[in-house]
Image (cartoon, rainbow, N blue to C red; front, side, top):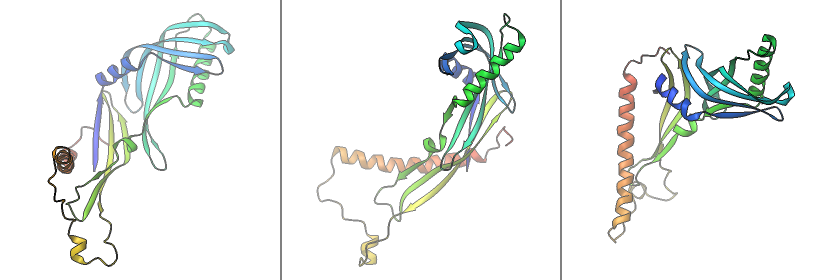
Length: 239
């Protein structure tokens, strides 16, 4: 079953305002600082384009003192990274333009290319391992048989950029984990009958723990039913 999360333009703008300023190391002793995000634009099929301010200091290029650049364009491109056991939503950062009006045009493009190679070499990207975050095994109460737990695994994902939102779709696989077989020599009645309850009546903490366990089981069932109902509704994104 698929579940979909949608990040609207205003959500992304708010996130960018909280995330920046941010600085990146360039080479052995260089630094790029990005701040003041504005004019966020979504480029369908590509990613987010942001106008930002930059402070560049890179002695290897002869920029000994920090150089302030008011007009710079940054592209943030989302994609799904497929690992052997995990899946991640990755936002790759790429410098698109620099307003270096005081420098020759060929040096302008040369600096952009060098910075992007440095960012790529250092794997400068924002990454969320959603398969680890969203996958979970929910233990069921001891009184429920033969199921022992429910496993919910986020096994795949898709990401899409439109003119007004970024959409993430995650594929969930649900499985029931049975209880282990009875010990050798146990009778059918012994295997199917739960252990007798203690003679001492449970008090406050144990009652609360039992209530929590049963509440989790009910929440799982209700949550799965809600997810299925939502997934059956047509999405405004064409995957």
